[in-house]
Amino acid sequence: MVRTLSIVVWLLLIILPIGSGVLFLLLSSFHPQTVVNSAALVNLLSEYESIVGSFMLAVVAPLGACYLALWMAPGLLQRPRLQQLLSPLLSIPHVSFAVGLMLLMSPSGWLIRLVDSVSGLFPSPPAGWPLPEKSLVTVMVVLVLKELPFLLLMISAQLKQLPVSSWLTQAQSCGYSERQAWWRIVAPELLRRLTLPMAAVIIYSLSVVDIPLLVGSNTQALLAQRVYEWTFQFSTDSQVKSITGAWVLLAMAFVLLLINTRHAAMYRCLVLCKKVNTRSAWWNSNKASQYVWALLGILALAIIVILALQSLASHWFYPTLWPASLSLERWQTEGPYLAEPASYSFWLALTSALFGTLAAIVLLQRQRQKAANAFYWPVLIALFIPQVPLILGWQFVLREPLSDGWQIGWVLWSHAVYTLPYSYLVLYGAYVRFDQQWLTRAQSLGYSAREAWWRIMLPMLKQPIAVAFAVAFAVSIAQYLPTQWLGQGLTPTLTTEAVSVASGGDWRIGSLYALLQMLLPLVVFVAIGLIRTQSYAEHS
Image (cartoon, rainbow, N blue to C red):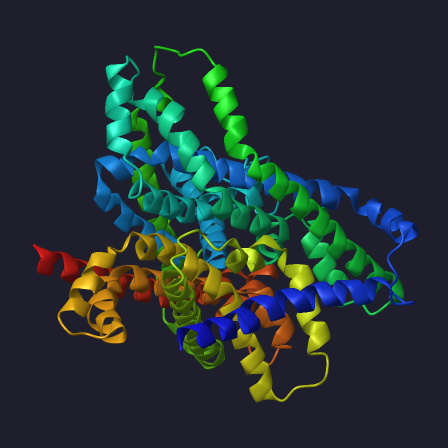
């Protein structure tokens, strides 16, 4: 039974989506009207600013998030409960996070208003502010802060598998400080184990479209954004550019993934060749990283509050610190328009998260049957390919007109393609670490292998399964390109509507969509937190 289900999962959620994307690019590249040749490549190079900007974003944002996560990670050892702080941050979709961050930190944001109310320095929004509403830097900041909780969660899972405390104690006995031991001994091993999660972050940063539409530069669009725009222009030149751009994205992805495989080795060489500095800078202290943990929690809370205030504000002009009045009028006015995308978002996320989590369990259970504990990296292959070429391929396969019901089905399938790898990432460590002796003892008491799984293993793994489901739910909520392209506008979600409204400059209505988009996964993560609390109470 498990073998059959695993074959179905491989065919439907791994082989079919990847195969269709590759098939589309190959067929389109040799089609007479959209042939990709040297002339097409030279024509695309006129968009060199987009190519360079995309490459910079895919390098700087993942590295920034990675090393910030490594710097903060010792807090997870000293205060394990800090992991609970990751839940509200993970639950905030990228679009909601971007909208909330702009309402907080843009030149006319709440923090500038706060400074002006105290000092009177900014009677008008400051020019040359480091975080403008639309720029490549803004996209980088959003991606660094949003990918940080995911990498911290991956680091937390790895810390449970490594004898980190023993390593640090031995290093300190040799004269290293705690922080020096962390960066020289623990960090290289964590970087090696973070190769696959980092690959997913790199590819997402390279191929992201919704965040640049919201806060990216209007004059220097990223390459993925340009390819997305070209696909909606039906001229032959635009179609050739879109296919060529997809190939360039794949080539950039290959180069970046190749570099990523050598990241840990380069870091190890650099750190071990560097002379030990006995003085500890302030930024390398545990207290400094604790401040960042506190700021991260405050940021998550502030984003929720600012989105709620903006959605309820009737009038809120710069530089006033608080809205003139709060009213439910906007909610009442937009309520009828919110109902349909909210319903689609919830049911798509619920169903695709369920499918993705169950599919991950099937694959992991099949691994246990085969006694194969190695990480199945092909399960994550959808995360290693930019979304634009993949979804272009899916459009090619599904190019015939579809009824509404079938469109919803294909959108659901596309979401499940992305919920599976994230569920697998979260569940893998717990599944591999599960002690086989529990099942052996159950079978010695007369249980069959299937009964032992249902009665022993499943209840003991309910916490990681619940977390995997919550992460998959949040991943589905955040999907933009699959919903926009395969849904053909007939399956609107909170994400597609939030991007559409907020990218047009209407932050007031955009904040309403973003708030509701954030609340759906937040409720799921809160429920998971309650399950954990109940489980701790039962064990104590």
